[in-house]
Length: 346
Picture 1 (cartoon, rainbow, N blue to C red):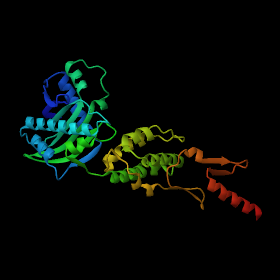
Picture 2: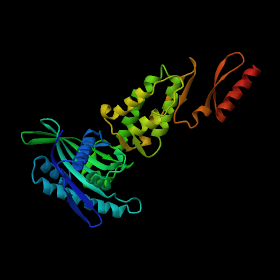
Picture 3: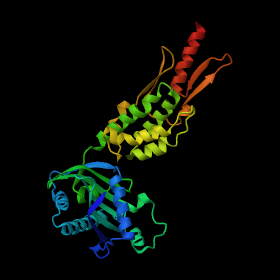
């Protein structure tokens, strides 16, 4: 990777201005910037976007950055635009959150002879100062020092260029709308409903369903946990699902979970849905159904997530080694009880 253009600008909310920071050619600042750009360019991002057709402001600025048209002026315009959008967002959400003090990094990087990346990143200002002065302390964890970022793939050949994949990353649990919509003029490629359908569909078909034949018990438990996660309101995160649901699951039959965790993390890039989005449970409610064969004539059908699965469905062996399934159910008890008494009377 070769950095063709780079600008660092402090977003100063106290004085309502932006200030260009000097970049030393060698030493701590350069190392910090290089590490930050590499981290962003290698990051798959949270969500894929496209430029809004009716808004050309940021796309025009990025066009000029790519074509080397007044890059410093474009960077200052971008920084002032961010300051303005952050001030508006702070006024709207003052009771909820406070916009972090940060430094804006704008870069244009050459990856191959024709492939480039445009990077815009807001990072922690204190972390930057500590790096720049050589007074680095423990600092923030790697993922926390970058608050928000944008990375756009660019194909550039003979002064003709096209934008490819556009992704963002946000350290907050929810993507800040002022960052991707108001500041960057972006809109999502897939809406939350489409993402929910795809995520659940491919988790079910690629991760869970292959377990059914050789690991039916683990399949049932993991399916139940997955449905519980997908039917709850809030954000979907493939990393959360892979690490905290699959990764912490303790199988009882020796199932190796590590390959499933890796496979789950590859699903978004392989099958075309976003790493993070807001779940829409109603979009997949009809798919919350699983059947398990009990005998040639009887099936167990689950239509939703079951809390306390292990207390609801249990196994039982009588003195004659006959094996049964026990299901906690008032209605089921009344039905079985009437069948039992009918059988006794015959």
